[in-house]
Amino acid sequence: MDRNDIDWRGYIPAITTPFNNQGDLDTKMLTSLLEWLHQEGMHGIVVAGTTGEWFSMDFEEKALLYKTTSDVLCGKMTLVAGCNAFTARDVIALAQVAHSCKFDGILVTPPPYVKPSEREIFTFYQEINDAVNIPVCIYNWPPGTGIDMPLPLLERICGLKNVVALKNSTGDSNKFLKDAEALHKKVRVFGAPMNDYGIKLIQEKKSDGLMGAGAVLGHYQSAFFDELWQGNITKSLEYGAMDCRIMDDWFDVHYVAKFGSAQAIMKTALNLQGLPGGVPRRPILPLLDEETAIIRNSLEGLGIL
Image (cartoon, rainbow, N blue to C red; front, side, top):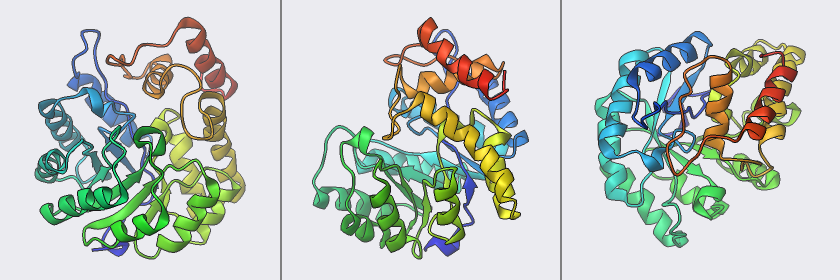
């Protein structure tokens, strides 16, 4: 199995998970959000990722999240299940549920917080690879794991039989390029920014798309790729500039929130538009009024509000 066994490309955002005011997963809100994402032309979605607050959901909630998502969107777009956990055993259990729900693949970071060695990281992915029968996207997420996986390690992991993609959220643009140059013929590489540099990477087939920014701008984000694929570079860049605006306003170069938490930022952006973002679940807190004002100002500047 390799990049040619899947058709993933374009804008496949890691989406938020709607919780209600009691802190429960709200499947009605989730269904509405999923239907909106389909209407807005997403090329796929990732559920239960970092933006989706996987760290505060238990196994049963993730299973319900997978099932609801599949019921609404299976066969309509690429579906990737975040299956992050501290142990390979727990990742495998989640992957089996995702597979039973007919997801197209799973997304997995190295164990967060632990900062395992390169040998331990490779063994972690190897154990998952050997136990699952579903395409795997590995996720290099330095802010969350404390490790920016080096290229030799990524090459070994990408050589595993079920690994088909890499979401590379390194904040080092030179490293991203070197990783993409070395790996793009084996796996699909996600992480290209919506600017001239990202367009060049996609045109050179060194990147296949992006899995970021929570789809809070809807079709304005997916249209970056739609216009690019049609050769409308100027229009593509116009849409890309909107995504770059919110990234510059809300996040630093390492994709870490400049204020509050990323999950609260994305949910606030949705809620301000009358969309079902819901509230974040503790330990993540809602934004303060002055922080919400920053989100509002960005969206007003873009003509969204």
